[in-house]
Length: 317
Image (tube, rainbow, N blue to C red; front, side):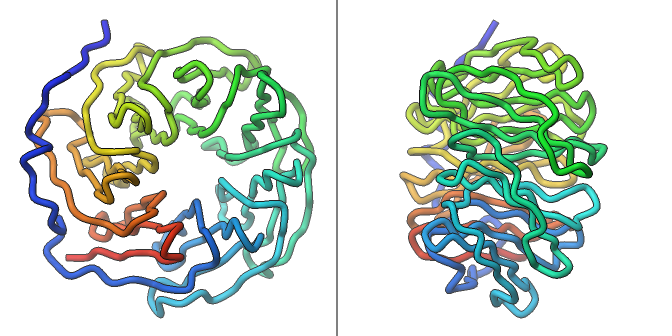
C-alpha cells in the first residue's frame, strides 16, 4: 500500500542554508541553457549538454573552466557515459538521433537514429547497451535499445504517452522509465524487451535516481512538489514526501547514504537520508533555474547545474 505523508511540516521549518558549511562557488559560462550533466568516475571532470547552442562540454572541475567542447546540434538533452568512460551517448531531441562522442578526442564518432524526439539515455551496468527514451510525436513513446559496440539499435519497447527520464538498476539491470502522460514509472525487462510492471507516482514525474545497492528508486514529481520512494525489490511505492516547488533533478550519493532533490520552483535543494531511517532532512538555497544535481565520488561535494545562470554551483565542506 502506498503511504502518503500529507503533513510533514519538518521541511517547512528548515532554514535555507548551505548544508556543507561553506560559501558556494560557481563555474560560470557553462554553455547556453545547460540541462543535464554527469561527473567522471574520478570526480575531476563534468560533462554537460548545452541545449541552446547545441554543444557538448567538458568542464575541468579543478580549474573550474570549460576545457573542451564539440558542436553536435539537434538540441541535446539527456546523455550517459559508457561504462569505460570512453564514450558519451547524447540524445539530440530535435534531430531524432543519439550522437556518440569519443571522450578522448572529443570528436563525434557516430550518429544513431533513435526515433523522432529522443530525450534521455541510460547505460546498462555491464556496459553493453544504452537505452534511449523517445517521446515521439504521438501518444506513444519508444525505448530504443542501442548496442554500444555495434553503434546500432537492436530492439525497441513500446511505451505510453510522454516518457521522459530513465534509470537502470545496477543490480537487477531492470530499466525504469518515467511516464509523464500517466504519472507512472514503467519497469522494463531489457532481456525480454517487454514492460513487466507499472507503479503510480506523483503528478509530473521528471527526475529519477536509483541507490547503488539497487534497493530504492527516487522519483521527483514536479507538479505535486514531492518525492516518491519506490521499493525496487517489491516494485511498489513506499512513501511520498513533500520536498519543494517543481522538483526536477535527483541524485543519490555514491555511498548510498543521501538523496538530493533540486526544487527548481523554490530554488532549494533538499537532502534526505536514502535509507529513510528518519525523515529529518536539510535544505539549502540554490540558484534560479537549477535543473540537475550530482555528488562527487568522495561524497563531500555537491554540484548543482543552473539552466538560467549557465553555471555549476559547487558546495564543499
